[in-house]
View (cartoon, rainbow, N blue to C red):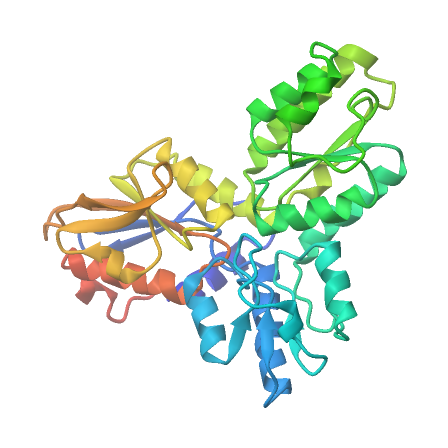
Length: 387
């Protein structure tokens, strides 16, 4: 059903100009399904390469550096196929490098990895690029950072410092240019005070401890900057940070002095499409929103944040989260699973918004839709349903 919906929307809107949600009316249940959601090209490509590695290497040990993507179902499928993880999502080793042999296979996940880890893999006699699944849009960020670094700019990375992708981007960036990571607009405002000369440069090293490249000179390396991003961050946040820092730079050095690099083309199209689709969906009224994806998924969490601004939102990762009298969901603020009482009275009208992150399979979205129809007494409306 989800595939049919996506194909029909794509055929009617090949240029992606219509971001209005799909309306599914199932008895008294109306589901507003976001125009864009679920697997992106980078995720599909990564999964395909990973399973190809399994098929092409019978009898060999196959390792993923860490989770392929932030989706427990996909990672469980890979483990069931015999794939093992070398480290967790924070970069902590789950086994020792000394246990790896040249006969083993190592897959680099969609987030990419650091230059140091690539070098370590090569030193073990394994080609890290043979089964590399790094998303092309992540590599685009690396290439852009290298380019502006060669032009004499310092790279400001908007991302979560401990996220695999940001760690990888920072590693690649710092080989080409002085680099620093900011996570929020508040970080950018603080960085702006150093750019503007409002704070002595010595304080930079404390305020941004662990987030700047070796040899960073706060007195001179903040005179020319460019902003790139972790591709799964909120596009509006990245643009807001870039606009703010551009204004600070212009106020100190002027608008025509070449002190700010244009890096708008590093935004991931899929992240941007999914976020824009949610914003368009939120124009309509609804009782609550369901966002489906891995709880450690950055792009999914930002979809949750967007929905939370408008209406009650439930972040779930499995159909068992929906129960007859309550919803078990992940709370972004407490970082814990909480349960919210929820009555699904049959016969009463209910409007629910639904979307999913870029690492969520369409099959799970369809299962969630079916579960919601069952709980509201509308499962029969799905039989023979044609969109």
